[in-house]
Image 1 (cartoon, rainbow, N blue to C red):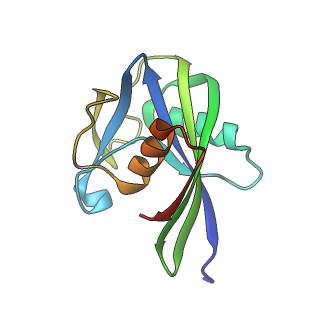
Image 2: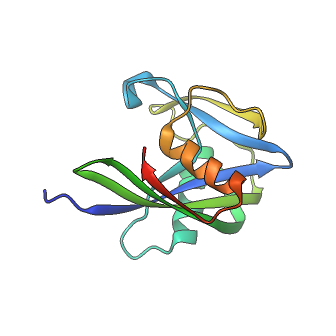
Length: 141
């Protein structure tokens, strides 16, 4: 496969000053890190549709209001590169639960100003970009 830039999204589900995070299964990511919902934008899908789909797939909730808040240029290596859109969901239907238990082991609310140390770097880049008030971040993750 020819290396190409992929498009992704990271979804911050917020309830007041709390953010919903999931802990990755070490068998999935190679380590147990916390992260937001997210994934690839599928062919023909809008960014908003991708955010709603990923939130439903991973947290089992239906986002009713989506806000795109940032864009992150995420360069992993010479052959792995993403442009990821950061989204915020503040309103939804349903009760959050793990939607992909083979990939994630825990779902937990954290204070937005007191996040865990062991973070999946692309998720942290989206969160930090949003918290800084900037709309764009560029760099290696």
